[in-house]
Length: 315
Image (cartoon, rainbow, N blue to C red; front, side, top):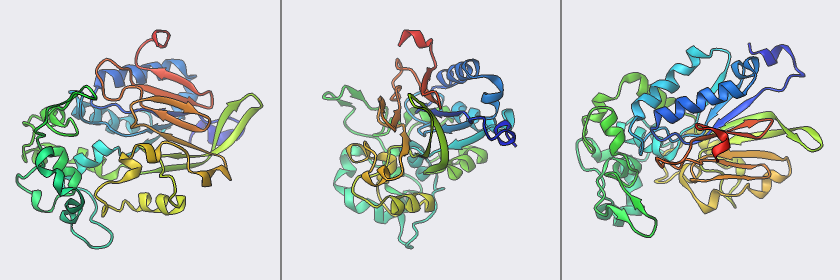
């Protein structure tokens, strides 16, 4: 039982941590900065929500997942939520540990809509590909276009920059041997990731004092123009029949809070977008974007304080 359970008047601290992308040193430094900037009893009973994308780009995906797996034993009074990001979803798809589509269809049915991209994106065709979800094939494949000059992007082997993740487990990019190289506890972690997390009573400090809100945490956001309850139910069910899960990998269509949530003011917090964007109750916490020179950030509620892996005064 957490400290806040004993004292209903005490506001539980919530830390929402942005995309880590394989940078173990940044994650460790951010964690130390959170621990030092939050009162110890509050930190030890905090709700910690990781917003997804633990792998790819940085060179220490394996170590990042080890760190996350060990948190519950190191901080038993905290509550830890590990959301799936689109990169983690694709990693799990390559390993063959996604739940099967709810409608009984085959994973290969997810290829059809995007098959014209197969050659350009160099989809994986090695052992086990025959019934692999589209995103696993994209993740494990080798893209033929190494750079996107318009965006200044250099792909590290795949459209997902997955090469460093393979290498962190000691196998070359695109090797089917990754399936055997990933420890069972890592597969269990990836399999158990939540696609969405809801909290009914989260506090924020406002000019009028402490206010109470519902909170929805999801890696990219909720889609505009689609029924919110239907989206939440699909995310909770982890329905894998879609070739692309928009709430995990969408862009413009998941940027804003759906209008339906204005009836009961709701915080929507995400990572994914390569930006730190605070607009009312819409919180996008991905200052790092998986880039080597950018900080990994977290937001602390109810104070709305931003904490980074580096000295906060430098940004």
